[in-house]
Amino acid sequence: MPSHKRNDSDSSKTLPSARDRAYSWIASAILSGDVAEGQFLDEVTLAREVGTSRTPVREALHRLQAEKYVDLVPRRGAQVRVMTSRELREIYQARFVVESDAIAKICRRRKGPPAGMAQLLDDMEEAGRQEQWRSFAQMDQRLHLNLVRHQGNSVLAEMYESLGPRHTRLAVRTLVEATERLKLIEEEHRELLAALEDHDSERAIEVLHRHLREIPEIVEAFTG
Image (cartoon, rainbow, N blue to C red; front, side):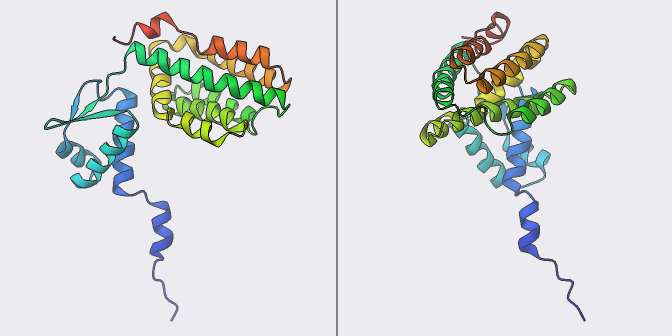
């Protein structure tokens, strides 16, 4: 008689761990604004919401602390980080330094845009039409990370990737606070693609500078 025993090693590849489920649930709640900035998170409540024990929740919170989503406060627990206008400016400044350097090298070597950039822009625009802000923001982060990786410096790419969670959170906040900017963001992405295809570093960096400029209504949405 043939055996119908389930291959647990195969199923484990498709089912997220309790820690991953907790991480995804908490990160989604923060990105969507369901959990407010400055709010303290209760492990017992989170465990009940996620449907797991407190240990995976605690592990997820440590990961979220490393990614700058929460601060772990002694004797008080995890608090959702309050992003400030100063942090916003500093993130944009850091991104411009790294991305403009990548663009200059990519164009000088005539490498063209990263593979799949055009398709990724199509997918982002579809997410924008559906107002799927988290998906749009995550793809936006991937697009810019791919640009940095394309220059071939793995250390710079790792440094840039560490900004990913804050990049995504800022992008979601931007789209929520100033949804009317979506069309302009998409146009700038297309301009950047065209400049890379033409190996025109000056034009590409000028587009990037506009893309990462301060937007008063966004800056005003942050404190400090």
